[in-house]
Amino acid sequence: MHDTGPSDGNARTIARASETLAELLDRPLAAGLYLVATPIGNLGDISLRALAVLARAPLVAAEDTRHSRKLLSHFNIHAELIPYHEHNAERERPRLLARIEAGYAVALISDAGTPLISDPGYKLVRDALDKGLTVTSIPGPSAALAALTSAGLPTDTFLFAGFLAPKSGPRQSRLAALKDTPATLVFFETGPRLAKSLADMAEVLGPREAVVARELTKLHETLYRGTLDTLAAEIEGQSLKGEIAVVVAPPSAEAAEVDDARLTEDLRAALQTMSFRDAVRAVTEARGVKRARVYELGLALTKNGAP
Image 1 (cartoon, rainbow, N blue to C red):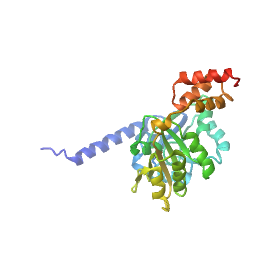
Image 2 (cartoon, rainbow, N blue to C red):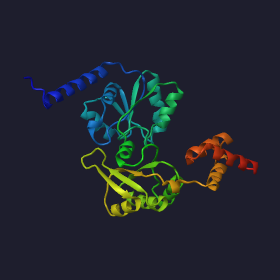
Image 3 (cartoon, one colour):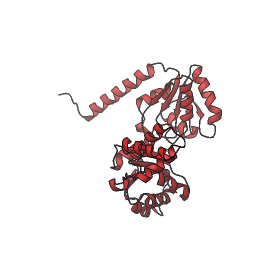
Image 4 (cartoon, rainbow, N blue to C red):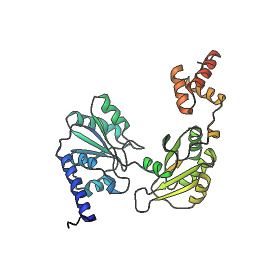
């Protein structure tokens, strides 16, 4: 009887993956900008499509070339690697666009995860699109989504808020603006600032459920679960390194109830820079309330002389 044990099954999986990658590598790579997601820790998370693009692209723009060179070298990829980060973007952006216009395929990668998510690249994408150039996303790892989906908190509506301000005052102001958002909140934070950020979250948002995710996809991946106040106390004094994701539960139904006075103030502020229609839509979406309610409040406000 032919042995069809696990080793044979693994061999077939390896062969099929190799065939798929070979087929991708054989296809020509059209000129354009390719946004390539790379592993956030575990190199095994890179996709076959990402490998095929990086191997075929003659030029790879990376946030930190020293960091990214290790990834490319691991997979024996020898593309030209140039830095593209917030400090040189104004100078390098026209050069990258010119290369694409000349018929080159340019891959953009960040230090880890999906480009443009708390990383430079938005203006490059916008300018490429304005010039009629092709922009293609090669999806893959994302620390924000990995943290969200493993947190055990609601995922039907969420807001990624990136990094909070390093100082407590501006940080609390930002948290106050997000307090009534009817969605799970996802933040990035650094290890040295984590305990103070959690304490500010607890003070502004209250004792909501939260999860702190560190070393995602790596050997020592750890998820701390609890309320914001207990997490702040637990992590105080710990020496954590690297970037960390914090996932915070949405406000309770009672806390999320927005009164007419708050909606009216939101409308008043929005009408300073928006049309009536856009202001109503913006407040409706931000507060998660019925449009008819906001519309009636807007009518009353404009009748009383608001701009």
